[in-house]
Length: 356
View 1: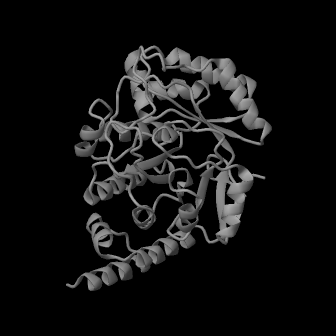
View 2: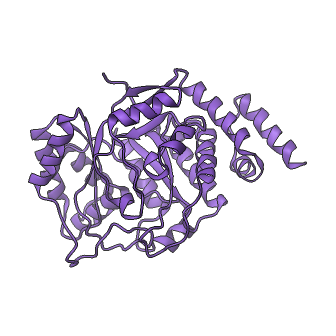
View 3: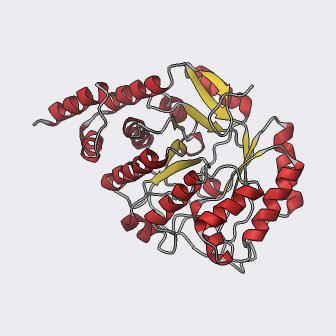
């Protein structure tokens, strides 16, 4: 079968409502042109979200510590234990950051850091409890790797660790650290970090406890197309099992200042991966555009390649910024970008529900 005939056959099955396979996705990656992928992804986006609206949230990233012993080769943010540049933010500093966000109408904090050997579960229980006592904000926090490390340090099961964190104030868990969910890739870029099954296990345990999470994919380091498609399949399989993912956020590796180095992938490649994410993840409601790594113009285009969400306002962010991403956007600018792309901007909460 000719490549064009194969793409046409896959598209016909897709438009008839059939679920596509790993092999279908790989053939689309290799042989479909960008316009064909855009049409398919946008069809799925409209099917799931018929309103001409794009959601966003007023949120703030708080990187509470940069101390991390794992030394991932793709990360320019971490500092090893003992480094003079390492830090752990005080409660006072964290509270000030939250006050600034709340004063600007924000409702969510995304709190993440490194794997700091000095911080056990009691630190997080105290921090989250104190935040909830002083502010009416949603805590979207900690990566799977952080949770696994907290459990290890505190000699607890992962599920019990999540349950205690939740009881202290943690509301939802971001998909950070997903990288590419293939151990062949993970062993090359972060050999000391969690495995694919461990990352998925944290998400499964959180979902079973009634918590919602997001999933991400950082592609473009040492991975191949087959790895990226396997990542999408693993996310889809877990979503079939638990239904706990609220959104999927793909973004490309940022090589600046990292030990791994390499080249940044193109906007063309980003739109291709975004479209394939929307086409294949038929059970994940929301796909988020990554304007932080791509810039506003590519993010606007992403709204025709399957994305229905524009992410969050950016008060501050240090992890991706450390690797060279320099884009920043306040709420008014974010809304302007969405309007100019032909959509109505709508504020949402962490559960992707509209808010005033």
